[in-house]
Image (cartoon, rainbow, N blue to C red; front, side):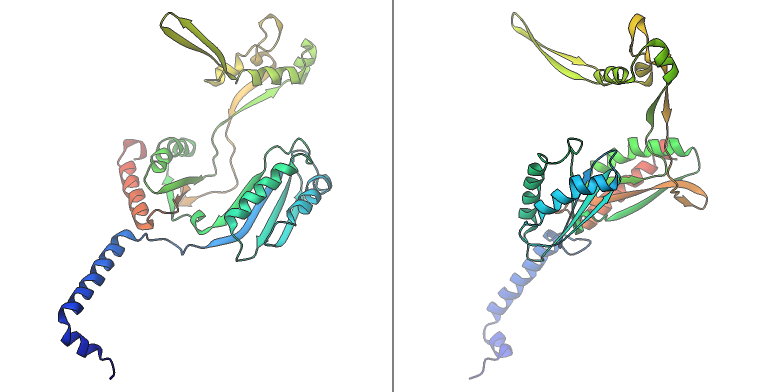
Length: 312
């Protein structure tokens, strides 16, 4: 006797109704609980390592970094292909693994081998950058912000006001700003003739400048029931603090042997809309966050920012 679904539904109406209600309930739970992603989750079997070597030429980078690194990385399980690029000041190592490779384990293996390599590499290579690529690293929102006023002031307001508020939103992992104007930097231009005339060595001046940025714990003092912790804070609070730094005998200050000023570096890139200068803001969400909810939260926060007098 063949099984008949319509016949079963007629003979067992209560069972069919309960199954239908169960499916509807599970569908409703899935509708509200399942996250919405911009792209399907996929793990790229690609790792990029960057070994900075300041002041070195391509041949020196190849001999002292690329060759030892290739020899160490070639034996990593699952490695399908490795390429190195040796140029001035750095060595880039790109590794492609087979699709069945567990990338979390491979990443730990690469970190261990980098630590072993530090015993062989030049001392200038003290920091290695490693990057993995996956769909979670792609931005879910690209925002253009434009202003017809002072470009430097506008970029400063976005970095100091808008960026921190966007970073605090639930589901936001990173906020990246691309602007032709970078944050202001302090530039110290020394006058070599003045240093030579005063008999002061440039390395000594640089060491005094480094000492001025130290934060040290000096210990503690006990006074009856009270305990005081003593710290030395040597951070520069303003550009005047740097210029007034004593760098030589008889109260010789940095401003006497160098010019201390702010500098704003501009890139050849330019972002405009109808003649108004602006910048681009990239929003990256957390791996488990809901894409739609994150974008809505960002949009609502942008609406509140635009209502502020600062961004009129």
